[in-house]
Amino acid sequence: MTIDWYKEFVNLDYEPAQDDLICLYYFEPAVGIRSKEAVGRIASESSTGTWTTLHTLPPRMKSLEATAFEIEGNVVKIAYPLALWEEGNAVQLLSGIAGNIFGMKAVRNLRLIDVALPPAYLHHFKGPHFGNDGIRKMMKVSKRPLTGAVPKPKIGFSAQEHAEVGYETWMGGFDFVKDDENLTSTPFNRFEDRVKKLSKLRDKAEKETGEKKSAFLNISADTETMKKRADMLAEYGWNYAMIDVVVAGTASVMTMRDYCSDLGLAIHAHRAMHATFDRNKKHGISMQFLAKLMRLIGVSQIHTGTAVGKLTGSKKESLALADVLREKKTPAVEGMLLEQDWGRIKSAFPVSSGGLHPGLVPDVLNIYGTEMVLLVSGGIHGHPKGTRAGAQATMQAIEAWQEGITLEEKAKKAQELNEALEKWGHYKPK
Ligand code: CAP
Ligand code: MG
Image 1 (cartoon, helix red, strand yellow):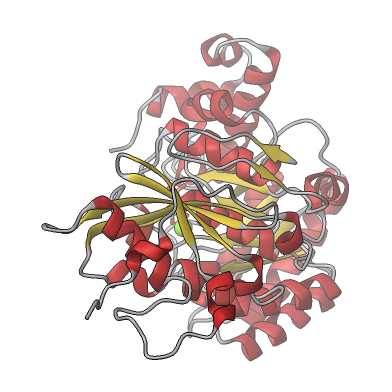
Image 2: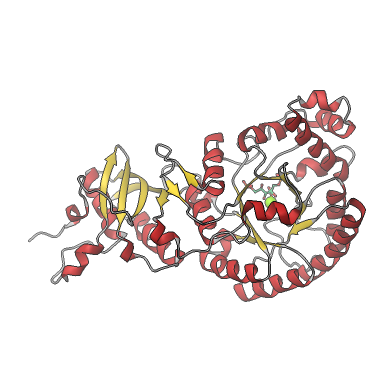
């Protein structure tokens, strides 16, 4: 009596249908399990299968089975029939292709690397509300990277102190003041207070500079509270909301995407907690997939690393992430990306942040170019002459890069940059 039927889910001659959804996985079979058995189990458990042959199997089931169709070493491609997927439901997609399979005994390690979303699946999603051109128009910033900073220390300021650091940041030339990922509404810095106080100083900074100023105010909480906080942001004339998308969860980001769009709010997606599943290159879910999922749902920008700053992430990964977010079509990258045509889904910005200071600006811009959001936080508040000078130094470093001259060259006529280089030089935080 046969028990296993995994072989049904493997067919190396299978040609994926046009509207199949295709997943790229890294896998390591458990001891005693051959590759084909392992990939059969992955395809089975993430589509229609279970561990044993069944007494009855309606013929329709066959048409819903996933098929592992390409195995190269420890990488497998699995095709999923479109009919498996509820239209427009990214939550269900995750339960299928990123659910039980990570716990199967048949694999020692398993990592979801990327997903190719067919047009027939894509068109049920709205994607980013503004797109990168729309954000640039809204912020009146045309050529250079958009810039922002988090008041540091990352939590502890009163709402008034936070707003004053924000004012200095804006007066130094930055576009955005960002809440940190763990600042929401604390006894010493209530969200409502921060919105009111920051709004006042935003208006002051806009008047004094003639520039558009904005903020990524962190609304992360239960969805009902996030809605109320989004309402308040709109009421006080803000054009962004910030959500810690991993801890908030896919379902709430989907709800908030539409809610914020109706209020004219772009979403800044902080990715705190991503490293629980994307840091281990052998097990979990890649940042490429998280970035793709968030663009699909419709955030306007998401953190994608610096390669040179204080947090993990390679240059190759940052480049791939930037393509996933910005491009209309992304070519396949061996073992890293599947080919993707985004159709009418608008672009989103990569956000580079974490351990940056003026001395590292060229390194980051050499990776991302100008189509990005650059966040320099400790790297401006730690400037010898304070926040405003730190922001000015960062803007001068961006100018130097865009003029094609070295920071040292620029610093001869840019005092704030010179002072930043005297303190940090090109130091790369460990
Ligand atoms: C950076 C930061 C950001 C990290 C997040 C922090 O501050 O505010 O949360 O950049 O990492 O709290 O560390 P600094 P990532 O500029 O002072 O380092 O961007 O990789 O998601
Ligand atoms: Mg932070």
